[in-house]
Image 1 (tube, rainbow, N blue to C red):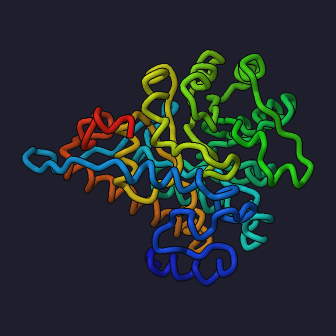
Image 2: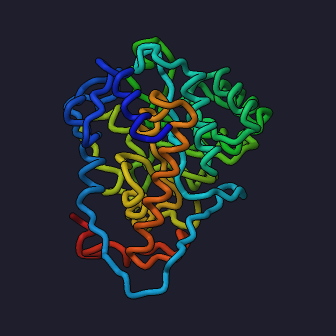
Length: 340
């Protein structure tokens, strides 16, 4: 199996659900929620792509970087690269049952594990826990912002399954899929975040941070990590792209919490840009979802390894010896381009 075969299989299986566009930018699927698109006009999805596209990389080859080091650590574990599988669930509504939540979660977590990194399990209940147990805890469980007691209870179950971390995607507070199903979700103020951190033993992640003040709230609550994310453009129309807001968030909390980011990542060059803008780790969603449909865990492994290979090439061609040394020097126009 190769990636071309994986993509061809996914395109066949996803007919009527995802067009597998040559450029996955959210234009063709705008408004398709449930589905693969961005909510409303699709502007938030498209802004993620555009925000990344605007940044250019400085080509440098007069240096001695031949074998760049992509290895990094997260919560004390060494990873092959700062590339993680984003949490995804809701297959009944988004995939129309093409894959079950168990099958999707298994493909993401096992595929990322085979590639030497970690995948995240979406809010798939017992199926997420089953996969974490089967994969010896090599994954992170991201839960919706439900009732406090439920979150704490599920976090305890994730800890027993050996998960490497646990978090809530607070940007799911108004998720239309869940509202349609009558499921309770809510925003989480500082006091409730602090209560969760104090009652959860695993490293705690707040996913869905898009402003410096909310990054500060997460840090004050004691979270170990934040994910800069607008939920793939699927919850609120007309938000900026994550690459636009990442630098200010990094300026506020870098070094105090681990900074992750998702949104529009399609290549290893995109990963390098986001690292240069302040991220410690980058999450990948739709490309791995397509790979999971087309090739299961093996498809996901191939997709992640391709991203890692592309990241290495981008590091060589920008003179970057290791992911720990990525700086804004690789970005053309910084700091002049910061406000663009």
